[in-house]
Amino acid sequence: MTTTTTAAIAWALVALVLLALAAAWVAARRARRAERAQRELAAQHAALLHELDALRRAMAAARVGVWQADADGTLRHADETARSLWQRADLGDGKPWPRLSELRAPEHRAGLAERLREVVQRHRPLVRLPNLIVRGGGDRLWVSTTAVPLLDEHGTVRGLLGCDVDIDTRQRLLLALQAAERRYRLLAEHTQSIIYTIDAAGHLTYVSPSWTALLGHPVEEVIGRDFRPFVHPEDVPLCEDFLARTLRERRVLPPLTYRVRHRDGRVRYHRSVLAPVLDDDGRLQAVVGNAIDISTDVELRAELERVATHDALTGAANRRLFLELLQREIERARRHAAPLGLLMLDLDHFKAINDTHGHAAGDAVLRGFVQRCGAALRPSDVLGRLGGEEFAAMLPGAEPAQIGAIAERLRAGVAQQPFALPGGATLVATVSVGAVAARPDEDADALLMRADRALYEAKRSGRDRVVLDGVAATPAGGGGARAALPPFPPLARL
Ligand SMILES: Nc1nc2c(ncn2[C@@H]2O[C@H](COP(=O)(O)OP(=O)(O)OP(=O)(O)O)[C@@H](O)[C@H]2O)c(=O)[nH]1
Image (cartoon, rainbow, N blue to C red; front, side):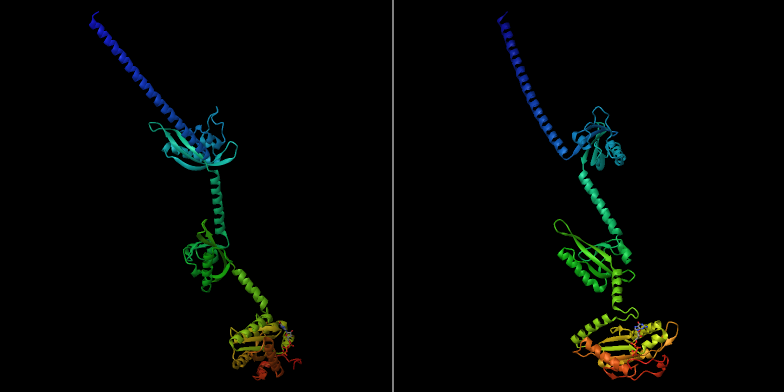
């Protein structure tokens, strides 16, 4: 072997060693890189697992149960939360999986199955469908179901991925709220009273259908309109003040009674409460009112009042009311230095009318007498029946000089025309009148006493006449009128 050959071999060996070293270095580097990549992967995997665990815990806390199903809705997988929501921990334990819809309450089964079919056939996701599940324990729980299609690389639906979220508390509250609202709406729409809302400017923003029943207008003619045209003009300021005070004081005030015009023109009496509706921050949301028709009560009270204060036979004010009004009128006349007249009237020989023609005839004369007085007096005058056939007329504003003429007109109105009796017969009756003008310092008793004395004088001096404050003002009535009367028995006061 030559030196040259030996050297070549040696160089080749060196090259080989160098190559082997380089390969070992590269391999070691690769191994280091692979090891680093594996460590990174493991770290990423651990982080992912950590995130997944956090997500799983978050979903469990939010009561979101995830499930997976075949395209026909048969379940394939359900996570722990889903199993716990459904109370079906044994799902899939060797037994065939049910369809998702089979876990639902019977009334919601078909609806859910149909919506899942739509997800598969039309790729349309199902989003938050509230539905009831029947849990393993038999109780029912409201969940909201969401489902999306699971597609393969060709876009074919291979199954469904979805979740059930526990919305039981919220849904039951919502249903209770809806039921309450339905109840209140029913109440508002069928109540005898009018429920309404009104804004600060006085526009009616809602009225219940009972408005039509109580006031005649169709509801659409009222909503959006100002309340004022519906209220009696005299009561508008009262109602405006009521609304303004409710808005200002933000509280329910005692009810207000006011008059409202029915569509047919009749006046109705309403009593209303107004309640301000405030939000949590105390801001005014609306003003709600409830008005009831109290016309019947008002009319009944007026009738009771009339019965209690008026004579049932003739309709004249009874003694109590007349004396009350007289007292009031005397005080008013004194305050305003106004004149006031008083007539004391007593039908003549009334006992004889009763005795001869009967009590019914006497009643007819009393009624006719009051009618004639009504025709002869002014609307502001008051006629009262003080008892039996004795009456009194109060004449506010009558000057002393006029009183005699008024009394005479009244006397003549009685004597000059016969009274119709129940059987068709007629009868002429007369009346004696004591007329006085009130004096400024006189009280009711003194005034009545003076009028009574004048009346006594009229009777004493022959009846069918007026005595003005003790002085005979007119002569006795015509003989023709007296001719119709039966012969008089002896009279005590003569
Ligand atoms: N029909 C009827 N009679 C009444 C009623 N109230 C009182 N009387 C009668 O009126 C009569 C009053 O009689 P008297 O007080 O004697 O007076 P008079 O007969 O009118 O005699 P003078 O007043 O003196 O002219 C009595 O017979 C009473 O019974 C009533 O509501 N209906």
